[in-house]
Length: 126
Image 1 (cartoon, rainbow, N blue to C red):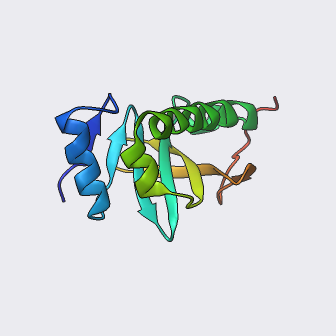
Image 2 (tube, rainbow, N blue to C red):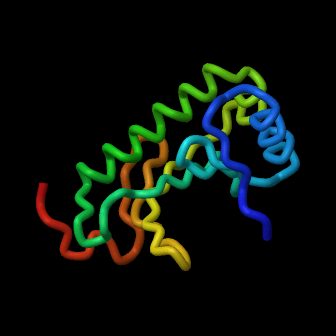
C-alpha cells in the first residue's frame, strides 16, 4: 500500500492531488496529521511527541487541540476541503508511532476526551 501523500500548504498542485485522492477514499497527511474518512467521520491521526509512559491527559489534550486548530485552519483556507468534509463529525486520535506500527492512546470526539484500552498506563498525575 502506498504511503499517503504529505502536504504542508493548503494550496497548489500537490494539495489538489491530495484532495483528489482523499475524495476517492484515500488518506493524506497535512502538516503532521493523517486525515481519512472512516465510519462516517473525519478521523485525524495525531502523532504524539511523548513516550507512552509520559502521557498525561493535559499533554494529550494539548496535542489533540493543536491538531484541531490545524484542521480548522485547513478548512478555513480551502473551500474544497471544507466542502468535502462538510458537517461530518471529527475524531482526533493521539497515536504513538514506534516505527513498525502505532498505538492508539486516546481520542477527542465532540469535545469528549477518552483513553483507549491500556491507557493511561501509570501515567504521572498532572
